[in-house]
Image 1 (spheres, one colour):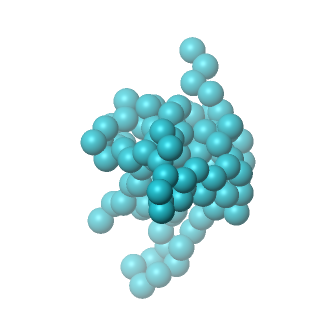
Image 2 (cartoon, helix red, strand yellow):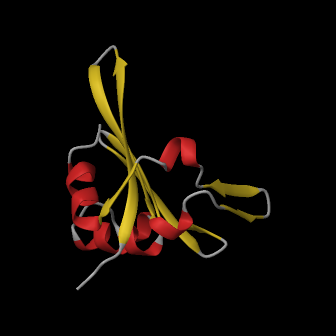
Image 3 (cartoon, helix red, strand yellow):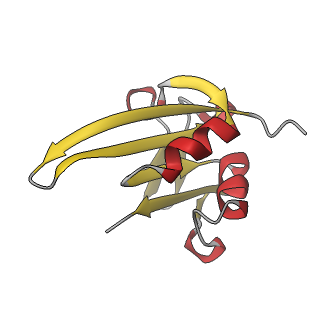
Length: 105
């Protein structure tokens, strides 16, 4: 079954604790869009999310190894929950668009 395509951007952040991997993933159709609800704005901008196009299984691999990550979209959120990477209660929504953060301490 095709789970859809996503954009993945992998960034390395070098801080006092060493190099940490930051991953941004969004469903393909959301890249470049902005959603707002009251004063809350979810900006799925190309600078942060616009890495490379891949399938969701590849995105999950990057997310498993990320120190921190931002996920946006129904497809990636659903699959990240199935994979045990995020808890369903951790998913927030802006204008119906789901998003979640992963932070490993």
